[in-house]
Amino acid sequence: MKNLITDIDGLLVGNATDDAVKSGTTTLICEKPMVASYAVLGGAPGTRDTDLLNPDQTVEAIDALVLSGGSAFGLDAAGGVQGWLKQQGRGFAVGAVSVPIVPGAILFDLANGGNKDWGRKSPYWDLGWQAAEQATDCFELGSHGAGAGALIAGLKGGLGSASIRMECGITIGALVAVNALGQATMGNSAHFWAAPFERDGEFGGLGLPNSMPQDIARPKSKMDHMQQTAGQNGNTTIGIIATDARLSKAAARRLAIMAHDGFARALWPSHTPMDGDLVFALSTGEKELPPHDGAFIELGAHAAATMARAIARGVYEASPRPHDIFPTWKEKFG
Picture 1: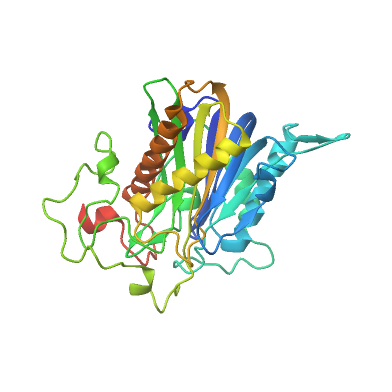
Picture 2: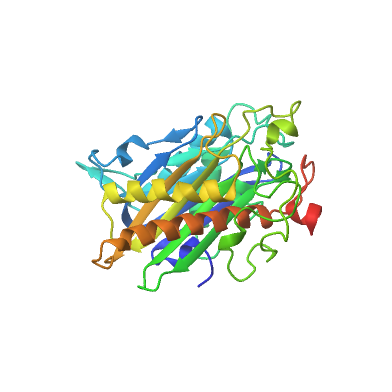
């Protein structure tokens, strides 16, 4: 176990980063088509090809998922991944033509100190291709890929991942780009909201504070830190929860909804009108869930906990870059 979403067989992840732009793209490649759905609970999402993930839609399986920076420009990244997959002969057969199915979601990182004067064409199509080309079972976290330009309230965000194997043998993995309006830490302390779920000191091992910070009840957001920089719209946390349990599209959608609890346990506030918070849920279908009624409930609870851990890891693993406007967690607390 690498404590990555790629602990689930059949999944590969690739990052591509443009340091000058302070942005990037992350793609999850399915080695074979897989069942997927999604749930949006934020008020400002940006997506591509997500309607077909609804349980009543025709397409049953997808070839890849894309998380990208760049706001609406970043939606081009899915086209790059799609182009790479087409070259591999992948896709949904439509007569003599195959169309790779690559849903994607974006976060807003246009006002983070990077150079966004890219001229006639944004870099995201090429970043999508590069991310697909570089997909592997071991990838970097923090300020890479879709997490390269991510910010949260007062700190850099980043790309996070985590995994767990349940007692029944089912594996769950999360991948998330953390660019939230809110905080991942409690008040002005170094302690993560996700601390109750931490495993093996994966985001510092601080646990819960001995006494709660006095300012813990006051919601803090980017609006407290960057009124003159990105205003209130530079946000969104986008993630993927994956499992090797066999799920229908309807069950995958329910798993995505339950995984959103991980956002609420790791970020405060979350699911705001200025966040486009979204979770994709993916099933490789390799194992049957135990037949008892509580098996899916346990799966969803572990999915939420794993997502919370991945969010904290994304913030914890962020690294400094030139022209940063916020410090990393390690710079501020390390």
